[in-house]
Image 1 (cartoon, rainbow, N blue to C red):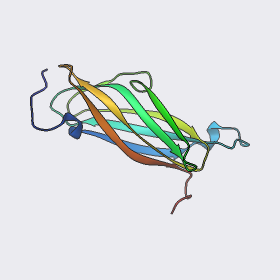
Image 2 (image 1 turned 120 degrees about the vertical axis):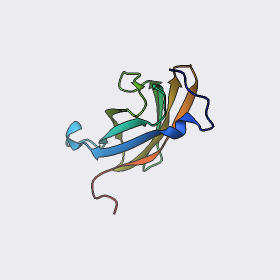
Image 3 (image 1 turned 30 degrees about the horizontal axis):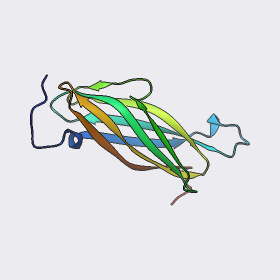
Image 4 (image 1 turned 120 degrees about the horizontal axis):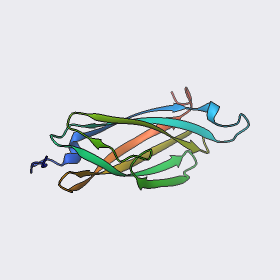
Length: 132
């Protein structure tokens, strides 16, 4: 299917939803690090399919330490998301502090080969009840 030439940016019609949770069981009890899972749902509201080809994350802990993560696809996949459909996956991050943030983007491609970037707003990684 050919992506129609429209006045809107296709990235504006891709929604990224994030749910995070602390994973204390993923590290030894005497660890000074903190593990978090993040569940991502990518929803395609365009009238054409899009393929998630690349990810970029900037992870920042409460001390200001930044880690960049970049690579092809997500969780070993480069999913094609049909119009009106979604793709969901869960991944994780380990940071040095009880609170941190993640932000980044996905590069996506249409069947015509047009590439566009979907920004992912900052979201918080935090122990439960650490921030009121």
